[in-house]
Length: 305
Image (cartoon, rainbow, N blue to C red):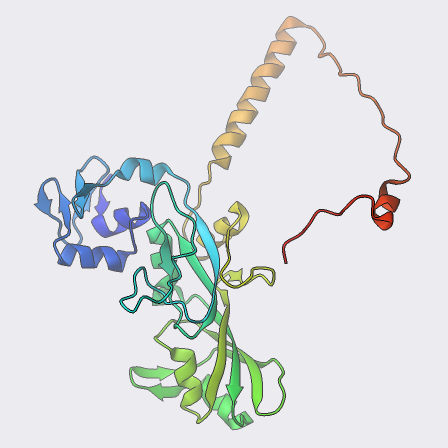
C-alpha cells in the first residue's frame, strides 16, 4: 500500500516531515532513479536514495520505535551541527544501529529542561504540529515586579510580532526578593515565546526550564546532560495522545505464549496423564535479613540520584 513519501520516510525514522520536504526541494532524494517530488506516493518496494545512499525502508519500519528523554543544559544548541562549535543536544545521545534521533520541539540555547527524541518521525510530526495542541509546561524565574493585572493579560492575550499569544495557565511557585518562580503552560511552540510574553510586560526571565511536554514530565532524578529511554507503557501513552498506535511486539508474544500453552494442555489431555507436580522446598525466613542492613554488613543497592 502506497503513501506519501514524507509520511513513509518519517515513519521509518529518517527525519521529520519538514526535514524530508527540505531534502526533496533541494533535490537530495531520488525514487527509482528520478528526483522525488512533494507528496509522491511510494511503498517499501520502491528504491529510495538519500544523499547517495539507498534507504532500507522495510527493515526500518519493522523496528520498534524508541522515545528518549534528555535533560538539556543551558549552553547546548538544539541542532546536529553548530558553526560556532558549541556543544549540541545530540552529542550525548546514544548511538543507534538503525535509524536516527528526531528531536521533538526545540529549546533555546539559554534554556534547560526536558527534550524528547524519537526514531519515529511521524510521532515527532504529530507532537509538534499546532493542530495537536500538545501542552508544554515551563518553570520560569522572573526578575521584576509582577501584579495581578499583568498575570491576567498574559492569560487573556498579548500582541507579539506574529500575532496574539497567551499562557493557558499560570501558577505561582515561590521565590524571594525580586525573583519569583512561576509555572506556565502553553499549547504551541513559537520561537522564544515564553521569554517574549514576559518581556512584553516589562519584566525579565532570568531562568527558564521546560518541565513537561505533553504526557511526559521531567523526572527529578534525571540529571543535567543525562538521558533515559521511555518504557513501553509511557511510550504507548504518548502515541495514544496524538491518535497513533504503538506496537512493541508484546501482542504477538502474548498470542504466541497463549497458543503454546493451549497446545501443551491439549497434549496432556490426549495422553490422559496428569501433569507432574514439581517438589518445592520451603525455606525458613531469615530473622536477621533486615538487621544486616542496620549493622552495615550488607550494603543496600545503590540508586542513581
